[in-house]
Structure formats: structure tokens, C-alpha cells
Length: 365
Image (cartoon, rainbow, N blue to C red; front, side, top):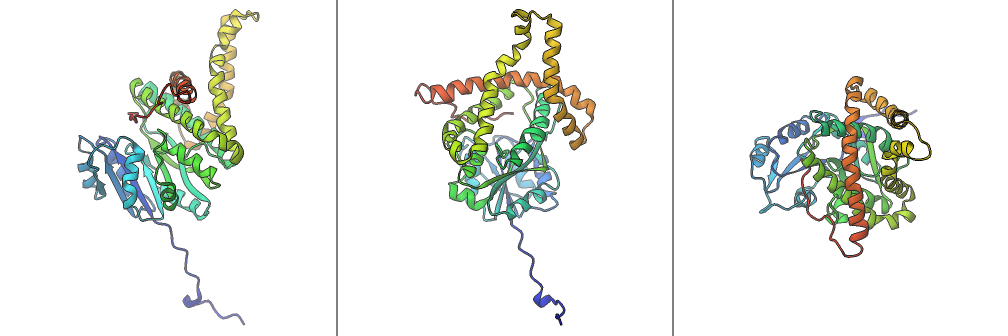
């Protein structure tokens, strides 16, 4: 006869991994309060919160301290997000580290949704679905369309293939031992999130995209800041291509495939944008309205289905999503210019020792 189960012989539940949130902040007095409120109100609260007041000249440190979190103040501005994060790393003794930008707001269940993926010991980094906090200016509206498309089309496909291109640096969770064994957040490129994501996959570990964990990032409001951010992103992408792609071709071919596709898209984009002109000036001799209609129809066919799905998934008004769609072409023009500049500088001039590439970190807002 089987003896009844008693508390004495009932297995104890596995201990839950502990979490430290680190927030690098330089002159973030406006955005930081909302970020801290979103973190302190998590359904599964973190065990520790650290704000790195990295040489701020405003009230960033004072605001952080008023929320009862740990505030670290380096003796001088460290110069990049990765360096500020590394300044906090020795103060972290938890199983997991969640790095959050000081202008990013997390959904109340963000930590709750990310923690379970680390039950797989192969997972070293994970991040959720990033959307725009504001859609006030043309550049923010364009970015909202980019995020809706990218995080509901590209990223899920990459996750299905176990090869995410990047775990977004504004809201990524890391296994602390992976960071310490790697030597901290990588400082050798200008985009530490992509560098770490590719490096871990090269070593046979996993990076994970969690679509139901949502974060809202504050994006550039003006062309000036958009240009700074996109130049950093594109230069950082090309730096990682130069650093990692040869090994990815043999060790992680699916991730290498996404990278090559991205490079091909950059190369052929000018031809696609010039298609209406080519249709009206070459031997096709099509009328201008017909050429523009053909081109616009192709764009909508490639874009609209994913946006409709994203709007439904995020419960966004369809009219708002469609209204923001034309603004994405302003952002695409900026993206293309800096993608080609980055390709020239980082993949041609740097190997020829004619340029140092982008080495100075500039904020994007």
C-alpha cells in the first residue's frame, strides 16, 4: 500500500533565479522615473536595482536615489553604455542580470515572462518585444512601423530557427555567469547587445526572443538624434559582421544566413527605390502613375500583412498603424544612407587602415 504523501517527503520546489536590474543613465532625469516605476511594479520584482549615474549633469542621481535604489557614480563619464554596465557588474551577485535603458518602460509582467526561459541551461541571454513609447513626431511614427514589422515578422522567424539576430540592449536579461566568463559587456564594438548575442551563439549557447514580454522604448524625436542613433546601429552591425561573420558561416550558418540577407537588402535597396524611375525611363516605357502604382503595390504586399497581424497582436487601432505607415519611408532613407556609409567605412576603409571606424558612443536621444 502506498504511504500518503506528507510534507516530509514532498519534493521542495526548485529555487527561483534571482535578478538584478542595472540601468546605465547619463542625463536621464526626464525618462528615468517612468522606467523605475515600471521596474518596481513588476509582478515578479527584482532582487536588486542599480542605477549607474554616469557623469550626469542633471538630477539623474538624485531622482534615482529618491526611488530607494542603489546608485553608483563613477568618478567620470565612462563614455559608453557597455562601460557603465561593466561598472555595475561587480556589484551584482544574482543569477540573472536585466539591463534596461533609462528611457525604456517594461510591461508589468516583463521579468515574469523572461525568467522561465533560463530554466534551459543553454540560454545565456533573452529579450522581449520592443515597441515605441511615443508617436508624436514623424521619426517616432516611422520607428513605430519599423518595430511593429521587425518584432512581428523578422524576429519570430529568427527565433523559430534558433538564431535571433540581436537581443535588444534596452531590455535584455543575461545569465550573470555568462557575462563574467565573457569578461563583461563587450566594449570592442559600438553595439554591445549584438556583439554578445552573436558571440554566445558562436560558442554553442542560446539567445532567445520572448514575444510576449513587451517593453516600450523612447526613440529619437528629431532627425539630429535619429541620425546619431542609426549611424551607431549601422556601424555597430558592420563591426560585428567584420568580427564574427567568417566564423558564423561554419559554426552558426543559420545566423550567418540572416546577416547575409541583411547585407543583400542594403545592397539592392537603391535599385528597388529607383524602380519607378527605371520603369518610366528604360525600354519598359511605362507611364509614371502606373510605375508608381506598381511600386507602391509591391511595397504594401510586402509590408501590410505583417503590420495587420502586429496591430491585432498588440491591440492597436488599425487606423493609427496605417496613418504611421508612410512615415517609415523617412526612416528608411536615413537607414539606407548610414547603412551604405557603415559598409564603406567599417568593411572597406577600416580593413585597409584608412579609418578607425566609429569608436565614440553618442546617445540617440
